[in-house]
Image 1 (cartoon, rainbow, N blue to C red):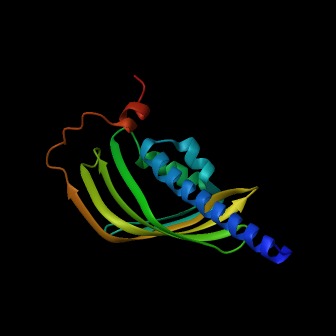
Image 2: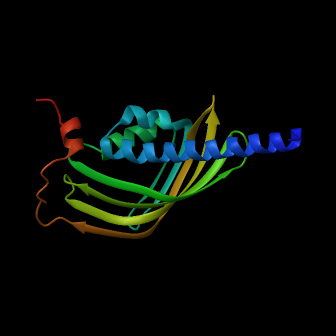
Length: 171
């Protein structure tokens, strides 16, 4: 094979590996959020991350990893349950260190303090940056496709919650 073909194959192989690493990054994001794994979440973001989430009843904007982690800790607490799934990724590698992605997300979030439950879906539009060989989330946005928000008339019969078990206030 010629050097040009070898170089082209190596570039394509690297891009495929980058796409796979970005998928794993986003999957880790959803899992860590729903399980209250804030140490892992912290490692997934750039220091200067920007967030803009637009729901039917809210707009959540912030900048900076610490601000985002603090907000996630407040939301994903022992009196909440979240289930977020991300699928149908469309990832574009823009350079050796920058990429973008679109993800279809479906979710349910129950907040027992506020007695509310949200169901819905959204399209995430993310920008990723590779820092020291590791992909991180630099910008994350979504706009809801639909959102169903309801007040809980009665508390659901939840027989187990990992967030409650992990994050329960010490007695």
